[in-house]
Length: 428
Image (cartoon, rainbow, N blue to C red; front, top):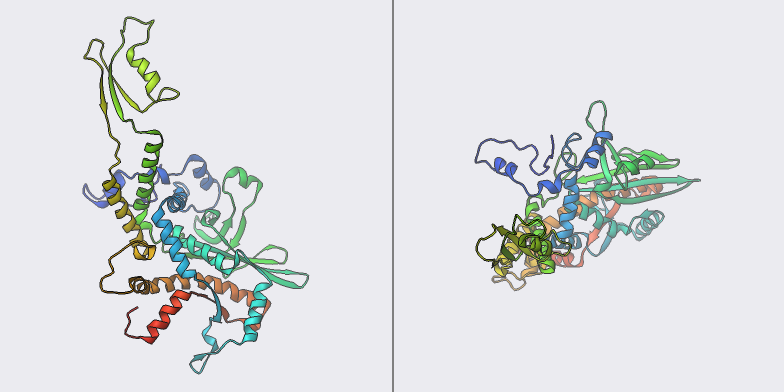
C-alpha cells in the first residue's frame, strides 16, 4: 500500500455518495501525513510500531502533523494551555490515596510528622521539572497527541536508595513488535532521535510497561507508565475530530502572511504578442517578459503571463485581486475556533472571548462550574500514574508511607466548591 492516509485508513468505499467515499477521494491532509522513504524504511527494518498505519504502510507522520497543528493553531494552543492551568492548579497537597486507610467510614487524618516525612522522601530523589511542571507536560502530551509516558527509576548505590521520575514525549517512544508473531508487545523503546544513522551508533532504551521493571544498569530498576486517550495501542487526542479546523487556521494565516509579504499569488494577468518565429536572433516579447516578470526569473514580480500569436490584438493587462475579504476570514476563523473549542469540551468565555451572559451576574464562574467534571476527570488520569509511581517510591524507600500521595490544588476551584457547599441549590 502506498501513501497510506492515517486519517482515513480502513475506510471502505461503499457507494458514490457515502462519507467514506468522499473522504477517500480528496483529503488535503494526506500529503502531510504520508511517510517519506526514510521513515518507511525505518519501520520495515526495526521491530517498532508506527503511530499510525502498519509497518509495511506506516503513517507515522500523523504524529508530527499533530504536534505541528498544536504549534500553528492559536485556538488549540489556547485551549490546551488554559485547561492545563485549571487542571494542574496552583500547588500540590498531600493526602490519602488508598481506601485501606479508611477507619469507621472516615479517612484518617495525615499528621504533620507524616507530611514532613513524605516531603523528605520526595526530596531525596529527582522529579523532572518538579511535580507541577512534570504533571503539566504529561497533560499537554495527552491533549495534543493522546498519549502520556512517565518513566520511574528506582536506584540503589552503596546501600543508599533514591529515585527518578520523568516524562517522555510520544515522538521518542515506540511500542515494540515481536518479529515472529508480528504482535505488539508491552515493551517500549525510547530514543531521543529515530533515524537509522543515529540508531546505528546509539541503542534505544528498552523498557517494559508497568507493573514490570527492567534493570537498565547495575542497581537501577526502571519501568514506564502509559496513559492514553482512546485508540488501540496508541491513543488519539480528544480534539481529533477538529483536525481539519486546526489545519484551516494555519492555512488562512499562512496565505495572508505570504500574500502580504511577497504577493505570492499573482495579481496581474498580462497577455502579450508572441515574437516573430522566423527571427531566431531576437527574443520574442513573451520570452522577454517571462525572463523579467515571472517565477522563471531570478527576481520575479507577481505577474501571470499569457501569450497570444504574433499579429494578434495589442497587449492587455487584467488585475486579479487576492482573497483578502475581511468578513470571509472572520466568519471562517470563528467557525474553526468554535469547532476546536467544542472538541476540547471548553468554552469561548473561559478563553477570554466575549459571550452572552443571560441573566447571570457572574457568567464566568457559572461557566467554569460546568467544566469541573472535565477538570476532575483529567486530574484523575494524570494523578493515577503519578501516584502509582510515588507509591512504588515509598515501597522502595519508606514502606510506612505507602498509601499517602498527592492531589492538585486550585484556589479558584476550591473557592467555587466552598460556595457550592454553602449553597447546595447551585448547579455544578
